[in-house]
Length: 221
Image 1 (tube, one colour):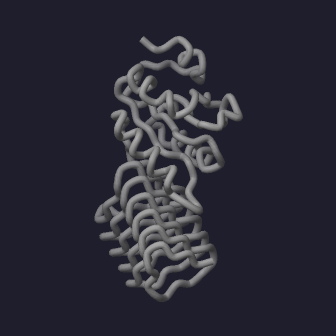
Image 2: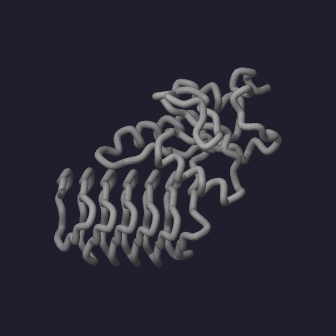
C-alpha cells in the first residue's frame, strides 16, 4: 500500500508498473535535462524527485517527494524501483558519490540511461547509474565507470577509460586511449590528446587542449 501522503504528490498517472518507477535525486538544472531524456525513452515512469532544498513543489510537473531522508520510506513502499542521481557536478563530486552510495544501500536499481540520439558501441562498457546525454558518442572498447555524466555531444573515443563519478561536459572530446581518473570533471569543449592520463579528483576547465598527463587533484583553469 502506498503511503497516502506520497500518493497525493504523484503526477497523475496510474501506478501499475512498479518495476518501471524511477526516482530522480536532485532538482536543479541537470535534473531537467535528465527528465527530458527519460521521458523520451518510454522505459520508466518518473515517480518524483528528491531535493533537500525543497524550494519548489514540482519540477517540470513531477512532484518533489521530500529530502533524501525519505528515500528508505519510498523504497519500502514501492518495492522494486530505480533511482538516478540528477545532481550536477562541476567543482566536486562528493554529493553525487554520497547519494549514489545511499541509493545502493537502500536497494534501488541504478540503471544506465542513454538518450535515443546517443551512439554507444556494442563493444564498449558503461557502468550503472551513468547517463549518456543527447548526441554523445562512445566508441569501441571505451570503458565508462558508474554514476557518470556524459553530457550533450561529448565524444569518448576508442579505448578511452573514464573512472567512476566523472562528468564529461558538453562537447568535450576524450581522444583514443586517454584515461580520466575517478571523480574528475572535464569542461565543455575541452579536448584531451590521445593516450594521456588525467588523474583522479581533477577539474579541467572549459575550452582547453590538454596534451600532457595531469596528476591527481589538479585544477587547470
